[in-house]
Length: 317
Ligand SMILES: [Zn+2]
Image 1: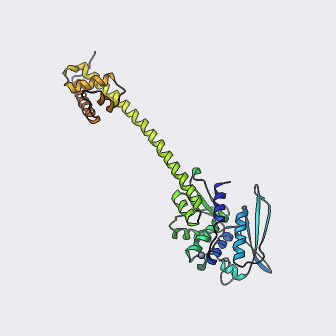
Image 2: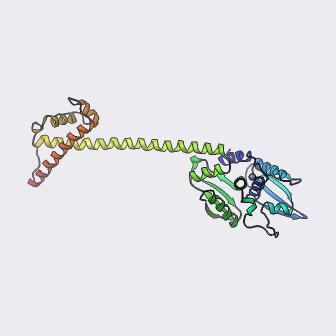
């Protein structure tokens, strides 16, 4: 089962408690679905979906709102595998107004009526219905993407305003005959799943996301370790060059006992870290102490090198 289907299955089990949110969810389902109005004597809404549980939910919502004689039929999916389910809901003009499909004057409504969206529970239910009928969401491992494919621009605008009011910034894009309202970042998707009541899915989404981030961070740490290792190899190589220069010009005997000790240790342990070199000293020395001595030696080597460059002669040993 795809992540989208799994999400919708969870959402289909969420039952809105009041008439306001039942109406809101059914409105979302019919506006998000391939809405057809049949007007032979009596008006009817036709909802087509690939998910039986979505059709069943719309059927129960319709019954609960007093819609008489709903009919559910199924046939082979003409556009792919499996079946499609078609729900036929005979509706009165009053119900069409209540669902925000026509306005008070009997014209097809372009915007969402206020009575559908004034309460928070109804707004959330409307978005849930809309997602059930028209939405999809990627598994977080496949990249963050959630979309709803809507029939017209005014609906897409109204939906992005609803989302904006809930603190979710959606993007819009035109696709052939439809409009996409979509979310591209994990935070917005998590907020949306929470808003429409997909709490189980949200948990899985967040877990996967955290796991993915921890993995990413671990990989970055491993890479950083390798980079550090390379850095210390390069540093050791530079130190050995400096020490050889000192040895060949002024000689190690000219160094104080501390510098002489660290020089000898570095030359015999080129791979050792600063901390390891410190442990080999008598008495043991901290990392910063070792660093201090090595910096003194590097400065001495730099002075020797610049003196040689001035004279234009190089050690020929
Ligand atoms: Zn409600």
